[in-house]
Image (cartoon, rainbow, N blue to C red):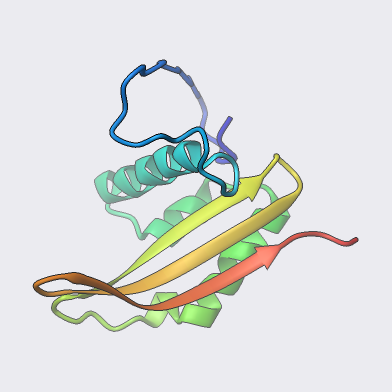
Length: 130
């Protein structure tokens, strides 16, 4: 289940027997393909709502650790005051591991010309206390 809160949530699964890449062996927070699906949907929903992707995520979170990780990466990357430049952009990703084990947020600064280059990453995490 996604961490984000909405008035109504319906989660469906589909078993694909043929994929262009094998996802079962990918390692990452919260099963990479699930996180990619959820975060892609959040970006699309934010765009449809005419909202900033960070603000849209924060609006739909009530987990204080999740909010803190996103706020930290936003501050580190200067997300809210980021300059708008032709061919440059910033993307945001967020994930949690095993529901309450760890949270991670990443902002990527990318340049897109003839090719796409990741120029800088800011990463914030909360792995709890050991």
